[in-house]
Image (cartoon, rainbow, N blue to C red; front, side):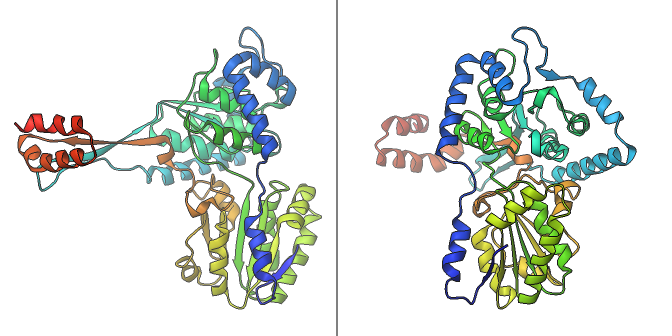
Length: 431
C-alpha cells in the first residue's frame, strides 16, 4: 500500500492523480449497455430469456412462469429457516433502518402569504419502485433492506425486486430480507437487462417509476442511460473509505476498517490520512497480516495495492482539505474529538464519528442508508433516502383580490418576454 507524505515535493501531483482516478465504467461498457437496453425495449421477454441464459446460466421459460420469479411464500420459508441469532440480527437491522427513515418523511406546506395567495407543496410517493439487488460476489440482504424499507416508509404501493440467480440459485438471506421488508415481487433477472425491463416494462414485467440499488458497472451504466425514462437514486461506482486517524488508535482496528471496503471489489478504494508516520507504517503492516487471513484476500489485496493509499500530514487539520477534495463515500473520524473535524468536513457520503464507530456498523444496523454516492459525487449528492421514492407537487390558489395585487406584475413580465398570450390570460381576468 503506497504511502504519500504531504511534505514531499511531488505530493500535489500524486494526490491529484488519486482524486481523479477513474475506477468505474468505460466506453466499451457504455456501448454494450446501450445495445442491451435497445434489445430489451425491442424484444422484451425474449431478450431477457437469452441474456439470463448467457450471463447467469439460468433458463427462463419462453411461455409460462417457470424460472421467472421467486414466490413470497418461499421468502417466508427462508426467513423462518434462519438460525435465531441471524433472524434476530436481520430484524434488528430492519427495525433501526425503518425508524431512521421514518424521521426523514417530509411535511406538506399549505399557507396564505401577506397578499392572501394560497401557496404550498404536497409530497406523495411514486406508484412503483424497482429495486436492484446484486447477486454473485455482492449478494447482500442488507442492500435489500436499505432499498426496500425507505420505499415502504415513503408509501410506494408496488415494490418489485430484480436479482440475478446464477444457475437458478437464490441467496436465502436475500429472500428472508425480502420477507421482512414486504416487497411485492421478486424477478430472477439481473444486469443491465433487468434495469431496462423495469424502465420500459415487458409483457411480464410492469414498468416502474424509480429504480434504485447498487450493482456492477453495467447496472450503473444502465441506470445512467435510462435516467429520464425512470428516476434513479444515483450512479454508484466502486466502494470507498477514507479514515482520518491519529496514533492513539489500535493499528489493527484501522487496518480492518480499510480492508472492510477493499474486500468489496478490486476497484474499491481505501485511504488512510494520519499525522504520525510510525502509526502509518504499523497500519500498513497490519493490512499485510490481515489480508492473508481473509477469505476475500485476493480482492482486498488487489484493491489496496492498486487503488489504496496512506497519506501522512503534519496535523489532522491538514487532512480536512484533502478529505473535501476526495469527497469519499465513507469517512471515519477516528480521533478523540471527532466533532471538531466533522464541523469542517463538507463533502462525504456518510461520516462515522469516533474510534468506536467502524464503517461496517453503518452497513448493517445503525439506521442511516448505506447506499451512498461514490466517485466524488458526495460533492453534490446524498445517500438514498425516503425522498428518492417521493415527489413534491407545488400548488397555488389566487382569488380576485390576490390577482389584482400580483397579476399586473405577471402580465408586465409576460409582455417583456414577448409572450402576449401569457399576459392576456391574466389581463382578461383583471377587466
